[in-house]
Image (tube, rainbow, N blue to C red; front, side):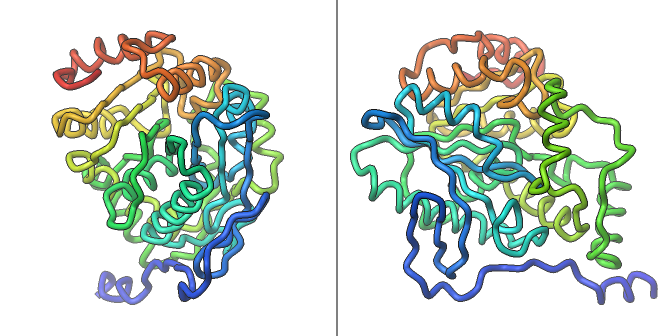
Length: 327
């Protein structure tokens, strides 16, 4: 009876309105197909761009996360664009989950617009955490324009199949009884980064969401399920970055994803594992190391990354029995 009563209260998604507008981009706005104004940031080279990088932020974060790496890449001739995804930052319906299809569609639309603006330049996608999961799912949906490669920084891959039963049961129960309940994460002792000053700044930033609705966590978990299950069908040149000290996305789902991903087709796959890396690899104290690897992969596709993190990945994955296809 209790389960029957709980089933009457469902976690909600808050999808876009009717797609009836012509999408556009301006200096600070990505106008989506439903008329939503998604804040857009860009870091542009002073000379003609060599490549274009479309960037997606993580859960509860927003596009400002890319300020320092965006400035670095622009100095190397890479034009970078990041937008606040629906429900985050200054995008509409703050704190509400728009649904996996909405996030994937927005990315596809922006990629099409930028390919029109830069018709002769290679286009790459970079996603941090949730952003990486959005990219994985978008790449496997119809309508995704071809891109030259994707970069996944600590992608959110903690699928239900890799969670303990009590965790999935609790999430389902809360999502179907009090989906509006907000959780702050206080008391959860994890280190997302070793950059303490950066973490303190995030704590002061009013645009970073501090209290999260249960139904949004439920939606994120659905996204992680879809991304994790896409490992064997992801067809794109890929650079995947992961920190050995990541306490947000555990090793078990990450390595399980890699096992399927590396066993699939012959597209170029480079895995980099950073011994001193945390979840926020692009903002850690040693973040410039990862920036240099990304820039080298985009511009030169070297046999070995400057940091040697790909060599370390081969050693780590060999111990897991997952090294056969890794670059």
